[in-house]
Structure formats: C-alpha cells, structure tokens
Image (cartoon, rainbow, N blue to C red):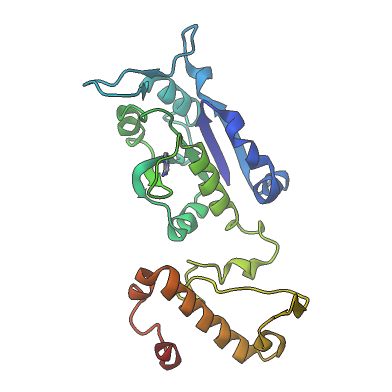
Length: 248
Ligand code: ADE
C-alpha cells in the first residue's frame, strides 16, 4: 500500500519510522511518502493560511498550495486509479475498525491533515471530481491539527495489511473486530507466573481446556462491554447472544 501525507509539520510524523509501521515500511509492505506543504507555496514567507472569509477567529489554509501538492502527488489525467483522499477533521465521520478495514483494502491513500481552522472547502470540492474524499474524525475532541489523527489512522490500517502482524490471528479477537467476538470489548489477559504477589491467574486459563477457556473469555468480554460500553451491547445483532450469555 502507498500512503502520502501532506503537512506543514513532516517531522510530526517521525513515529511512522518506528515499531510496527516502521518495520512494515522497511519490509516494503508500506510505502509512506511525506510532503511539506510549504514546498508548494510561491512567496518568500511560504504562506499557507489567510483570514477566514466572513470573519471570525483563526486562520484558514489557502487552496493553492494544497491543490498544487495534491496535483503533484496524483496528477489529474494520469494513468491508473486515483488515490483515496482522507481529511482528518473533528467534523468528519467517525473512524472505526470497519473504516480501518475498508481503507486497508485500498492500494493508495493520501492524507491531508490541516492546522488552524481547516482547509478552504474548494480544495475538496475540486479533488472530489477525480478521487474519493473522506472527512474523518478520530473522536469527539479537538486536536491542534490532523497529524496525530493521521498517525492513529495509519497505524490502525497498517496492522491490518497482509504480512504486517506476525500472527495473522492476533487481530481476530481485537475489541471491535468483526467476527469471533461479535464486537465485544476484549476482557483481561494474563501471562506467567501463575501466582504473583499473591495474585493468581484465573485457574481456567491454566486448565488447557479450550472450550472452558473460550467460554470464560466470552463471559469476561460481555462483562467488560456491559461495564465500559453498554451501548455496544444494546447494538449487538439479534441472535448474537446465546442462552449462556443471557444469564450473565
Ligand atoms: N483534527 C483536530 N481534531 C481532530 C479529530 N478529533 N479527528 C480528526 N482530525 C482532527
């Protein structure tokens, strides 16, 4: 997968060199290219923002550098499919595991993280004539800019790419993963030693009895979901709860 990020703070994305994403890049599974938006300005001050039309606080990012950057990265009329443009913004649609899965299927993503009050709307109206544009929020809070949201989304997408995680099953039971755990939150996990500071690992996990272990994990997932995110339980598809679940 290819990922381009246009930003006035390329250094903010340095964590993309580290850990899972860094390794995926080093192994050629992920081609990440960072672009400095200021390289697409034409004035001596390398201006990327201006006052908002209609007045109001803050500054708005100018359309020209953004469009020049996007057209340099993905030239209009070029052969082959256009990328999908992802614009992090608190006013976007929620970023979910389902959306991460959808983006992981794309061959090419371009991220456009804004600073200030956002980017002139015409950039996306224009880009939308030749590529799919998604405005996406990573949560109901306001960050100082979209770069951290890009880090969040790239990591969530990268770990779903084939070959990136060591054990292909390790995202099967993730909280929010479709399938095995029916969108329940993951319950507690333990490792050795079996007893530590007088605290014991639940006996069932040491029993070697796969059926009992699976049942225990599901019970814990149900309990945790009820405690932390009751609205997720309410949203479970009808028929997902079995007789034993309903007793909890
Ligand atoms: N930029 C600022 N806040 C954001 C948020 N919550 N999600 C995505 N991008 C943002």
